[in-house]
Image 1 (cartoon, rainbow, N blue to C red):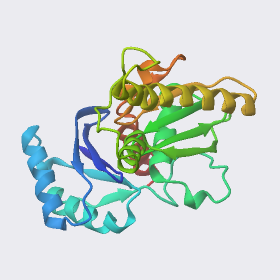
Image 2 (cartoon, one colour):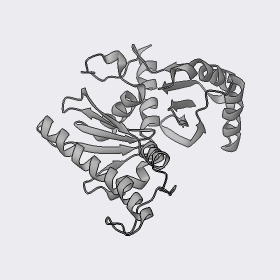
Image 3 (cartoon, rainbow, N blue to C red):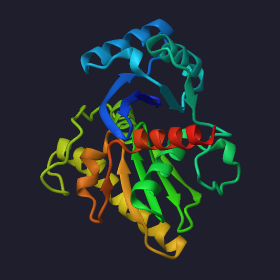
Image 4 (cartoon, rainbow, N blue to C red):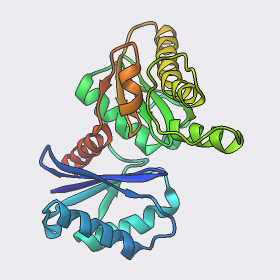
Length: 257
């Protein structure tokens, strides 16, 4: 079995693969105050919950955008599974040409998502990832990573709005009945959900115009389930995109050894 972990600023998404089959997906909170042993215990608890033998892993792979926690999570994985995790970074074989100013600065999550999107949906493509930040990655028709854009995340934007505007209430993240709200809650829901959907449509159109050809649009991220359904263009929603990308990269590096 293979353990795949994607550590973001809010959650660590993890999955276990048996060959190419994803046996389960789960999440634990990203918490800088947790010690190595605490993460190991959480991993073991999740394995037990899904009936996974912690001694049955042949490998593990990690992508991270939280460098201060990398060593802690590596230690936790080793204690829970007995294997050393491969980490996606400079020098990792991905099969993707990275055409940005400094390829070493490309976030591991963006790279992993792009690798999976090209493998599963082909190039050219855009990958919209709605998490702590809203990110779009651009892969051109040659399969090369060209760059993208980063925007405040849906939840981050909403939290900031509520914090800085004392009269606005805390709301659930859901779409209202119509775009033009007739009360404060509906207006806020419209702005955050429909506004984000319109931003995705508009940015996608501008990127296609800049590239000079149409692209396949892939959507992932925990908040995508609320937003993507309201976009007016087709989006290939893929909730396990990053886990699949980690598996693909692990296999490419294992074959290269």
